[in-house]
Length: 500
Image (cartoon, rainbow, N blue to C red):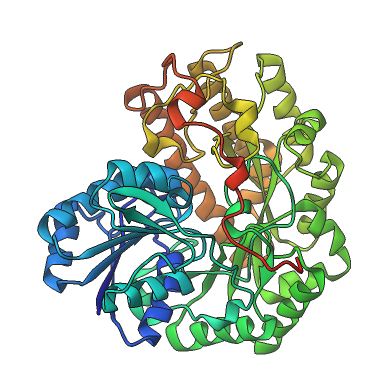
């Protein structure tokens, strides 16, 4: 079959502001097994341009695919764009099968199949095996009822099959790297880059996380095989930067250390960036030098909040003292630390904002990423937020960078001003500016200066967006009214054996 993978242009600031673009790892992961099954597979990446709906449809018509697959890491905020493009593709290619996968459709399959007739089937959970089995069934015109992990219509009504089995051996399915032109993708200030994954899932129980249940359990790739793949991408395709998409790659201490040692043994000069937990950094204090030798230049740590009571509320499972120690340890090894701080978990006041700024300054991270809490109805946190007022009804802005929940004690504009002020104060305080001006390592100097250039552009864009375009205001709608009933009982998307 001819199969077209479409990565739609995402409206998020992270996609529109940078000059850099990263390849869509999720679609490449699905594309590899389909290529191995003998299908003619092509990827159209709408992020470049970005491409208009008309341009994407023209690409699809030119290829004349038997099946069109959509998916997006932006999840809920990307759905309106996918919906619009998929509808336009259906109008021009009425006989093509349209398949949709990712986090959002995994949980919103009922609503999508009820209101979007152009979608034929939805892949729920991991897509590598499910997509290949589904495509085979469509090619052979066989029944879909026996395929686990999908949703479709039976006699016009949405139905879902039982959950697919979780993939235990992540190395069983390869990434379809040949679907992209590596020279078009860059990150970290124009350096050739890809997204990579060591593990899937997270063993921790943070109640607001929209990814934890999608992957169901934490698993990891073979450390040596991944190190060899990174070395191959560097030597054969000139890839310099590897951005880890994992929620928590270092969860397994032994496997993570084995990966770092295997990559060091490959003797490649690469840049690694990713996310981890502060307690893992503290745990690994004795071999943080391996992080540095392997190529890590920055690690993002989900500190989420600086208030112990709030961390307990969302079951973060960490302490503020651990967050500070992790930042200190990373600086000791000249690895940049980025701390995430999330506004809006609880009803904050001006005093709370002053307290947050003081605590963040005391943490002294190299960089800060300020976000807004965004409730997903398949997470336990949704029950905490379901009665709160929605102040942003444009679903494309439910991307963590836009304020979506109202506050009782301050209007949206004041919370926004506080968040922007905290970002500016953190990045222009004397210690931060000294690091901007000087660092003994050339690669780290480049990273710091690139981040400041990018951060300045994003900050200005967000300011203009809030006051001129976003229309953040009281809606009179509760979260439950806007997004539907809680479904945390469906949080785990994949099936596991009885032994687990």
